[in-house]
Structures are given as structure tokens and as C-alpha cells.
Amino acid sequence: MVRFRETVRSLLRERLLDAAYELVAEKGFERLRMSQLAVAVGVSRQTVYNELGSKDAVGDALFQREVERCMLGIEQRLDQHRDDLRAAVAEAVEFTLTLAARNPLVRAMLTGGVDSGLLRYLTTSSEAAFVTAEGAADAYVAGTWPGIDPASRGLAVEAAVRLTASHVMQADTTPQESARRIAECVARIAGPLR
Image (cartoon, rainbow, N blue to C red; front, side, top):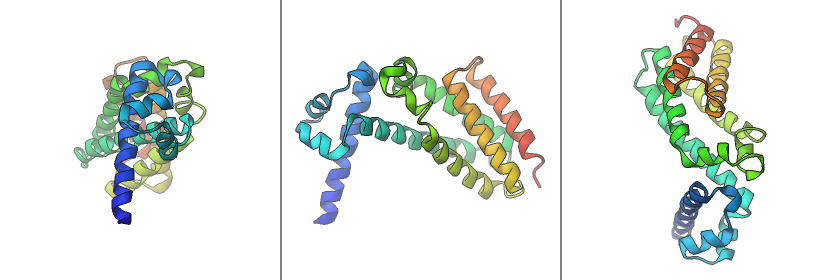
């Protein structure tokens, strides 16, 4: 019975986050109301608070879910080029930049302004996303390209993640060109593969 309850709660949480995603994409985070979420999913407002907590907690959950989804896509792109670090990084970065440009939640973050409540996830409250992304990327690179020494690997991963985030915020070139440049930086930092 406990497992059934956990499954139901997990499904409810996902439905609430899906509805929140749609509402934020349509109206912006600043206009999101917990009562709207309740109506969209067909539950009480108290249920929304019980499952998600505050509006800020909804923003946290939405952002973390998008980071995790992006990381899965990145891993798939890296897997396609396990024999070529530069090509793998270029593919992963291009995927990330293209996804960010098309993602309604990211657009809401970037266009909502300082008071929207979401911009902070890409600026002042972005450290959790960096930790998640850098940790996953470091583990992947260590397993796939063990010839890169740990110090160079750490610098290369940090550069890739933070440069990509910078290009999400304010790109001055196409995703393809940004990806090429970031991949070149990473390849130079990582050095020759042994």
C-alpha cells in the first residue's frame, strides 16, 4: 500500500509540474497562482501546497526538472561521439543552446525581468544547476576519456558548463558557432588524449 501511495504522489507531482510549466510558458512566472495549478490539475489548492510547497518551491522544482532533462539529452549527444572529445562537446553544447532557445520555461526566465522570480535560476541562484551539470559532466568525461588528467578535466568541464550557460544568457553567435568555439576551448584545456 505504501508503494501505491508513493506512485500516486509522484504522478500527482509530475502532473502539477507539467501544469505549472504550461502556465509559466503561457503567462510568465510572476502571474502563476497556486489556485490556477489546482484548477488545471483538478485538485484542491491545499493539495498543491502540500505537494509543492510555496510558489518559489514550484520554480525550484521546474528548474531542477529542466536541468535533469537537459542533462539526459547532453549525455545522449556525448554518447554519439565517444571517440572524439571535440565533436562530443560541440554536439552537446549545440543541443543545449538550441534547447534553451526553444524552451518556453527558459524564455520565461530570460524575458520575465529581474522581478519575475525565475531569472535568479540563471543568475544569482544558479549554483545548484552548476553543481549538478559539472558533477554529471565530470563523471561522464572521467569514464569516457580517462586519459585526461583530473586537473585538466575539472577545468575543461567547468569551462564547458559555464561558457554554455553564458551563451544561453547572451549569445552573440549561432548555436553552431558557439558550440564550435566552446568545444575548441575544452579541447585545448583537456590537452591531447592519452
